[in-house]
Image (tube, rainbow, N blue to C red; front, side, top):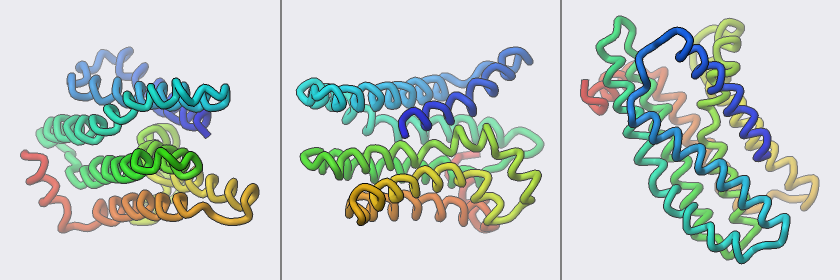
Length: 226
């Protein structure tokens, strides 16, 4: 699952960054660089932590967990800050999309809630690993949308369900994959997966609903601070 997350992020962001560079577009704001660095650090740490557990080095896993706590506290703040900086700049363009702020903020809320639960349940490995993974999957739409979103929009059109597919189909499939794993190996869904996936999916669906709700756009524009 961690390898799949890396694949999605690389497929979504590497071509976008390459295009940005070769077309000599303006540099990304520093807030975007800091947020990106924190997310890469999170994925790198997640990969190391998985490998440490497979190597039965739980002692190192616990020590490095302190870094995970720090990142889990920073990432929501950095993500929302980067969103405000970028969205505020886009408000001056001919086609701003302030409603997209719901996607950015609720991704971070989904991450924060699942990560907090994972940290509180770090003494229960089965629950901890599911919640950490769910926290990570709350954010992978950034890669999926850049990779496959445009194609899905051309096929499905616009509206709530097409937008949900464009933004979150990948997230939902990977989240459901954890449930399939539970059923295949445990014959039941782990309670942490049930609660964690309900939280993350609830955030994703709320974000998608707000995005297409006309009353949300002016609220988002006010929050962005146009």
